[in-house]
Length: 633
Image 1 (tube, rainbow, N blue to C red):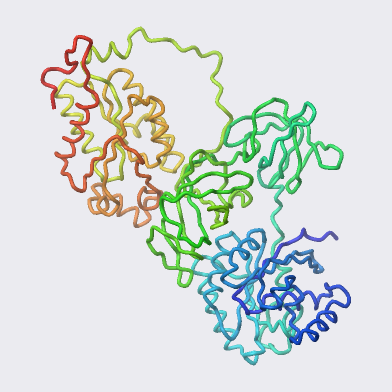
Image 2 (cartoon, one colour):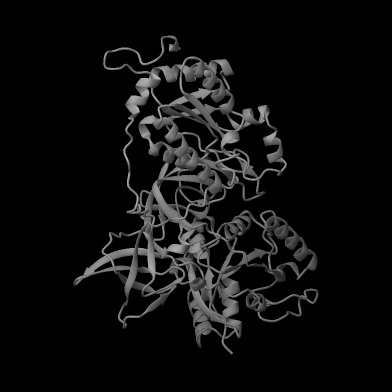
């Protein structure tokens, strides 16, 4: 009977709560140590005049034995009757949290060790939350040093209740909570006579009860490019397959560039060539086309590509000595790629002691936060819950790792990377016989797009409709596009999910461009919450596009709530509502800001009308105004 695949277990907990002791005793009880190992360690301890500790089985560094703390992350192979394990002993001391995160990031399950005397400490809480942050859902808790509390069931129940309540605060239910005395071997591999009141599994049985590690070969293909080598006449794209599998003949999409090519050959190091490769293998591939590929791009199959985005949300653990602050730039490393990212917003800082949220613009060392990052260009990534291999990242500042986290795209559009678009050769552009200048001359004003963006309730439609009326009275060819007239027809098939919102704005941008090319002034009054979507609308006709930010904060818009939408959103009746359960990205460099918290509607309309007069009015070649005589604002 074949065994399950290797399971990686990380052991975490507050300093001196007995993690290394637990592992050392577990290895000894299962006969996993080399012959004579324990005798040798006892002799060393006698020579150095120090008592023997089971933790010394694992502590590999001389500095650790001197100081009595675990500094490095130790990886120890271990085997039960069910399967092989790799046990990761992570440091518990606050100063070495970076090492603990590194160890936990690669684990499939975890054991949290808590001292029966001290109970749940700050570091216990922090480790528990970090395990959740890193996506570990299989967690057993051991309450150690039960011998020091006379194997008291009452004390065990008290500690159990405390840790259950804390973990339950963020949705984690431990698989088991086990009373142990690691020093004496109680409940390590079998039930102890000292705890007759405990009827659950021993530690080894709890480990064997964890589900097998997810097969990375069953996940979508993710092949980050490490480098491209020129060998003879061949260009070999080298890297490690992080998930999925590939074979000769597969068409690969390289994200975020959008370039595609087929796999011609698969090259293995110091081995014959192969027709296929799977997750975990370091390989090289040659392609059937000579396309430009560089380090950091991620190869996938076209039909299951990663996301391509310049903005994303992250659950972040901060390790830097200086606080993380909104507006700061850092280097983000994800797989083999490096990107410069800016902290666009610190959404909330989480107090790991009581899970309370704090509204700060900064994150102190050893704190956990939810942060929105914006990159200079598109980043190929996956939400962590879909693919941990390309959903984790680290941040670097001045060559030091200062943070790490996992990616969430909640509230942002699901923009999958796609092959570079190729315009059909059957399409031929036909030039209009009437030019834009001709239309402007007849209309006696310029065409353009007034793109009003802002939160629901900020005043976009109210201002837009009044500006339309006033301009029409003055002789303008003008029309308002807003949610009411667009979503009842052109975009009636779209919902309000992030990707639907993005498609809604894409279509509106195209329609607005057609209006403007016809020489009209089109007023677009849409929330359009994502900067990337507004930038895409501008890119269609940059010279005709005017981004106008109708500014009012969430509190003010919620106070107004003209359609009662905020109240419904707060009650959960409306999902993905901008400003409440979905993000709004204020314009970075708008052409005009109209602050409706300080201006009345009439004043706001006048601001927009003056902008139209200043930026759209022009003179013809004879110097005559193209506006009607009564158009002056």
